[in-house]
Length: 596
Image (cartoon, rainbow, N blue to C red; front, side):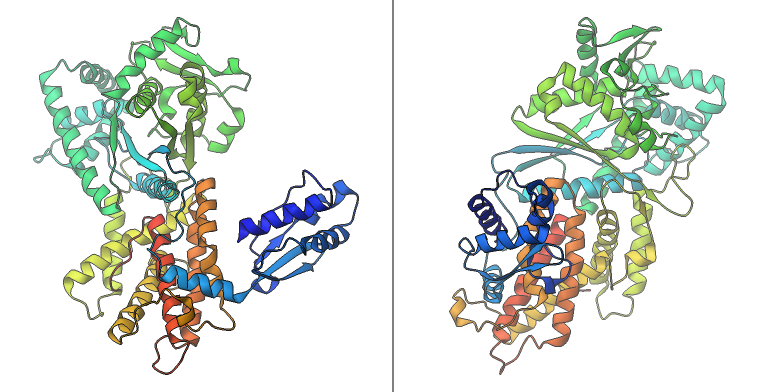
């Protein structure tokens, strides 16, 4: 419908001899203003030497011979907006079509034939998988599903730092901690914290940790190798348990200790070509030489997973800067390992159309430099690589820090939320097993929705109580709306009214449709916009409006009735709503429980 109206406007402009005119066709905030609103007169009037209202009159007059048959009326509103109202029968017919369809409503084929990799979560073995990783996972999984909904083949990837200073700190901590049970992810998290603090406060410990780092990379010390193998395995096993809870299944795992090692040869090759230069015994990339202002801090500490003390917006304004790729001790940095990673991605999948990398905003400055290096040393890969930075999840205590040991683990947050949900449904007539499943689905759905309801780059202030509310702007509210629709349809089936006839003539259509029908019709457009903008919040915000409209409809209409001729249509509307809601929640990575 939207495309047909756009074509009609373009034809009208051509009739008026107006070329190169830009315009947008959008959904009005107030449904009383119509189903679509166009700003063509507003944005082109000055250029054409006419008032917006006069230009709007001319466009509307020219439109009359080009309008699609589903348009009921065209009106000019305010200073010159052109509003289109569609025939109600069109929305009603679409509802029946969605209700009787295959359930793939909202999916498209715009990216069919493309292979796209999305890299996200990226936890480091020997450290806790924390709430920052939950941010990356929720966003990355949703982006993956949006890409998948457009017909592309998605390859999910996770890049994990299984070598480097943090590993050496954890192993040193394990050697020096007085604990009986030296195993499990909790132990390794504490060991890392112990080693990280010692590295900063104790010169002897710092020297020992630097030595361990060299042994880890060289694999030449039996005791260190044994601790390393143990910690790596226990960490990766724990990550798998968490991925299963979150609904993510990765296709590829990449490691600094494997793929990352290939980066050094790339740096050495392009050092000979002048891309990298030697500085005080280290090999560096001088970003300042590419025309942008320098950063004050060119160290490798701001690479993935390492905290930054600077505000991200300030670093963004400065642009490229110098970064170390091989240290003066001859060890490759995160940057170098990342070159090895990106080369390997395209070695495994030479036909990748795009590689999307999702990390925290504090790494945006780092990626600005890295993408410039990729552009210079591997131009085809650089052109297909995109970085997306996301905000931080914050609580009243402020930003977390794994070095200080006050990191909030993903598991701890999920368990806290789960306990709150269990309290909330304690009086429901459900079995223990049913409550356990509901608690898992609702807790994780609440966290994901809180992350995804706003733009990807913004910080999230997490409010536990608000996030599990069954009313209003929350994940459980959306889940409950879908569960309610399921219950209605189950009852309709029991009453012999659950089937939806494909022949629309056999279902009495209403003379006037509600907001529910109109919102359902917008779903494919919302999904496409979210995909093109890499913006899951468009889906999240849309679902809240849709759930609210359906709840209002349910409150004022009897869905199942033996006597009302509109009952079969209302059941079809409920089915179409459920399909749309379930598909939208799937795009957010949120499960719909059977009961709530």
